Each structure stands twice: as structure tokens, then as C-alpha cells.
Length: 188
Ligand SMILES: Cc1cc2nc3c(=O)[nH]c(=O)nc-3n(C[C@H](O)[C@H](O)[C@H](O)COP(=O)(O)O)c2cc1C
Image (cartoon, rainbow, N blue to C red; front, side, top):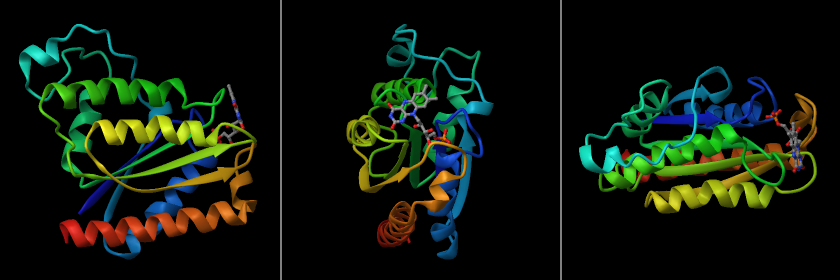
């Protein structure tokens, strides 16, 4: 069993990355393989609305100048997906939105590649907008006909601040445990 995580933060080792790793820690304790993709260190831009994926129906995006097809493959191979984003002006980062648009459109054009995969959500805010950010990512999972196991919010501004957010840490640990439980029920 495998879970792939996407960190939408431009800070690779920032708060969002820290919390996704904590979800992974709980999954790994249950023998579930994990892989984290840092969107900051890869290339992805928005959908160009060419609708070629709808014509081709080959589970690929025809735009080959970035890493969108790699992400589609990683999600296709995994049983679970973790999406994590810091709050940027009350919503996800542009990197996370580009991932959602590119991967989501190809899935929809191919009859729903990610149906019944299990999804978890992580958002980090300094102060406001975490719920809206989670909503944006959960709409992606719902649109993909995925099963949402839960979500966690961390609070902090500077890199590492979330380590001091005791409630946030509790939430990500519980999220990882429930995701492992559900994965084993459905895919074990
Ligand atoms: C461009 C930008 C916009 C931000 N907008 C918000 C916001 O609307 N609400 C909020 O609470 N924090 C906001 N923040 C703070 C980040 O969400 C916060 O620093 C978070 O911990 C960053 O997570 P990271 O370390 O994973 O990048 C913003 C930060 C930046 C750089």
C-alpha cells in the first residue's frame, strides 16, 4: 500500500512539510509506504484548457513541459493521497491549485482515475483562512470521487512554528492513524 503526499508550500522544510511528515510517520508505523512530492522543487503550471485530454483519454496531459504527468502517475499508483498547503491569502498556494487543475482535469476526462482512493488534508495558517484552504482541497477529492478520511490544521508563521502547536500535532497524528486504519480496511 502506498500514500503519496504533495506539499504545496514553496518552503520545502516549512510547517506544511513538517506536518505531512508527521502524518507519514503514523502511516509508516502501520507498514504503509509513503512518498512526498515537494511542489516547490518541481515544475507545474495551470491548465491551458486545450481539452486534448478529453479527446485522447490516455490518462495523460498533452502539455509536457512540466511535471504534471509524473504527478498523475504517482496518484494513480497510490491508494492514498495527502494534500498539504499553507494558507496564502485565505486559500491554497498557486502551486497546489495548479496541481488540482491539471491532475483533476485529466482524471475527469478519463472517467475518474482516482475514484475510491483515500484522501487526507493538511493546512497551515498563521492566523486565518485554514478552513477555506481545506475546503478548496477537499472539493478536489470530492470531485475525484475519493473518500476523505479527515483533515488537520496547524498554526504558525516561521518555519518550525508548528512544532509548538500542540493541538495541531495531535490532529496530524490522529489523521495519520485514521488514514492507516481506513487504508487497511479498504485495501489491506
Ligand atoms: C504570500 C503569503 C500569504 C499568506 N496568507 C496568509 C493568510 O491569508 N492567512 C494566514 O493565516 N497566514 C497567511 N500566510 C502565512 C503562512 O500561511 C504561514 O507562514 C505558514 O506557516 C507557511 O507554511 P509553510 O512553512 O509550510 O510555507 C501567508 C504567507 C505568505 C507568504
